[in-house]
Length: 481
Image (cartoon, rainbow, N blue to C red; front, side, top):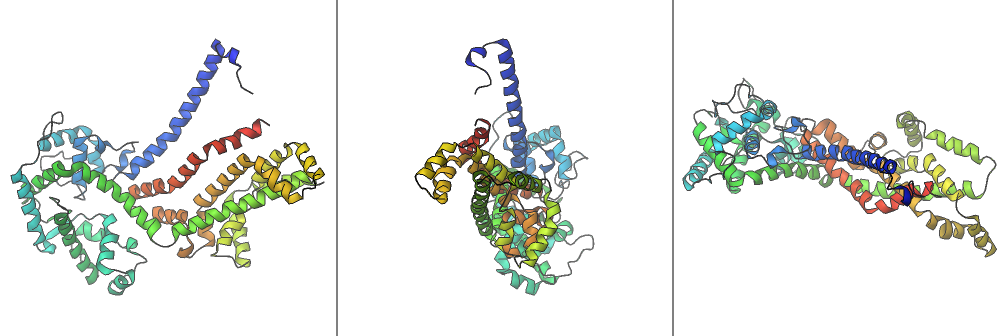
């Protein structure tokens, strides 16, 4: 039944009511889109602009900001040795990113006015930049500094050692995977401030990584790399020229490749390593199948056979929903331990097999089905299994779809229980690896964590889009019986 009749919709009160309803719905949509936009923008950010907290990446449409971000990709701090005339407040990149007017003036000084078409690099400027990069390739790595990208470390180490076992055999400190290794201290000090790497093999790997950056830049047709001469003031003119030529030739491409590197690292971490994807797929399928078996059977029994204690059973089932997961975690863990089910899919699936709220909703829907259908089935001599499978379940498809969706979301997104009952990494799901990634491995790279959130949200969004009509029917039908 409609809230407003067709004849009432043209009145002033009805129009005001509809305007309020649509305004609330629009506001709700904006409140959902804004956090998603900020997550997506954060997944494309870097340490230069990650603290802006904007729902978009300014560098995508601002040439000067894009140029500053390309510089930030190659220097740990703003390179005052190369640009001595820059504002004194420009030290760390997050402070530079706040000075939008200063970035505009800086960009116009280096690239020309933003209003007109940017002058392309000349052949002489390109050759000068290539010669500078070639000189770096034959230089002593001890005399070079490197602003390494932590996202490149696993790829470099895997190419150098092949296996983590071989690297651990040569390094003093062993690591669980290439993702756990870091050159943060070497990059920050790079032989200065009296810092000497205590691990000779790691030091050799760091020197090789400096050369690796230069060699990859030359092979990729770049004009500048993340490795620079230690005496940058003496080479300021050459570095400035190389940075400008690089930006003019491939500024937007570099931005997109750097943003895509966040997703490349996440896919390598979550999908390629271990069995995270397979474990999650098996868990989701089993959870949905078990939920669609146990909950409808329990609800059908309570609705069909009219037990004397039905109300008490329903009250007991609803009471289980009143306790938060943290309260039931310890007794649930002890039960799984006593049953010998730790580090198994059974420990992940069985505790969520039955849902008191789902059984309650399904029972209410089954109660509202026409009794004449069941009476006709009894007259025809249909067994109870046929009545359940051929009459009840087909009419309850929308409610079952909502039940399946809830089971999918719980199995897919829950990491606390999975982390508690499965301490072996071989049994970890995507949600557990995502927690590990955000809490430990990439805690200093929030842009990679945001990219991981965006990647793991794709299956949930796909399920909602494909099943939205069925889900909507499951939400609306119970109120229209």
